Amino acid sequence: MEPVYYRTKSGALPVKEYLSRYSRLKKDQDKKVTEKLRKFFKIKSVIKHATENNGIAGGEFSSPLLNYPFQEFRIPENDRVVRILYFCYERAMLVLLNAFDKPKIYEKGKQHRKNEKEYKVTKCFYDDFVKNPNQYEKFEQ
Image: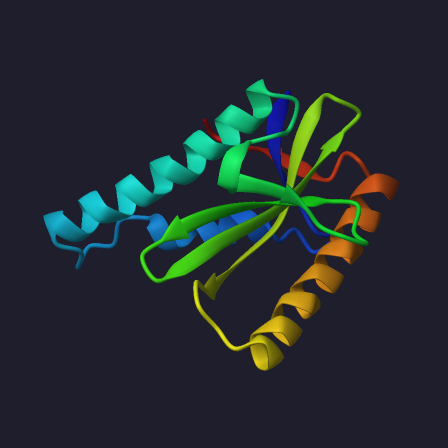
């Protein structure tokens, strides 16, 4: 199974854009660069593990979402959780649709509405990809 980034009609790559936060900036100190790389490689390892296991990262790292045709990776990171929403397409591709983060501990109301908004946007991405399955870019491993 090959991991790919979903590409919107306008050419945006939501997950790749989210992951760009782990890119090295000129102003970053060595310690900051090391921390960014550690976090990025953890995310990549979860995705790689899922591609090797029919789209399931296992344990605390992945779970299906009720009422949605996609799943999420949940990767703990300090005081928040990185969520990457994905699905398996024809057992050949693991399509990375969207990404966002949320605090590990939060009050349900406002954050729950934000999560639901992200899920609805991702559902639109899912529907678009199913209709146009060539809208993707390969995930660099």
